Length: 327
Image 1 (tube, rainbow, N blue to C red):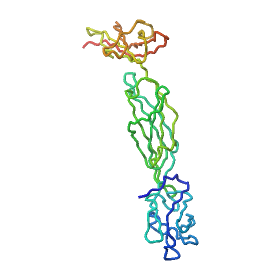
Image 2: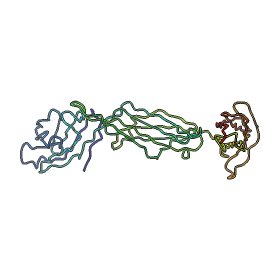
Image 3: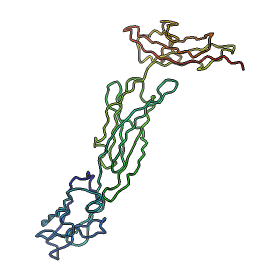
């Protein structure tokens, strides 16, 4: 069936119907109907003009080949819900569908987007972008885009998860929705670097993704290329072996030539700088540090990776707790 729209609420549109007035057997024939009114005749037209119960609401013209009905203000309330099936009579008998459903929409109100990060052991594991609107019709959809290190914009193809709450209709207003959509992007898909995210929220209608209503400003997250891990996060000094091995590494893709590594414990430098070694898979430069204190407490071990050419550096820290318990 043919469709009409989408048309924003309050905006005007026109419906046209091909007719053949020469084939009309009566001087006045029913032309326009809408299913929402029980197929009541909205407007009757003749070559000399149009009238009918809704003729003042929908100005209509007719010539020998075409009739045009104008909707000055698309509404889902007054004088009836126009989001319905519209038909016309081409004079030669029967009714034809002009549009199976006139699609109305309302722009998102108060659109906003926010970014959050999920972490594990102080390391970012995923990024969640959430866009929402307090009022929209019909229910909203979202699209998300990202850029890496200022490069080209790339659409996030992960499926968003959306939720919607109906705002009930009243005697003077139709139903609307508050909507929220979120997408989760694991860091494995992002890679190391600085990433900016852009979200769009829009009504779920044909072509809605091209309506920029609800665009949000950039949200940026920087993924640190330095990674640090320890052989244990909690150590009992009463055990025979209270030594913890801390490994710090950086991808070979992010530094050239090989960097230097230094370690510090709770501030003062404890080791370094010293050159790193290649990892077993040859994809990383890495260095190791041993921590074996005699006093219980929580210790912060920080690894500093320094570019040996331009002396720029990155830090990454981990927390290790030493306890004293007899088992």
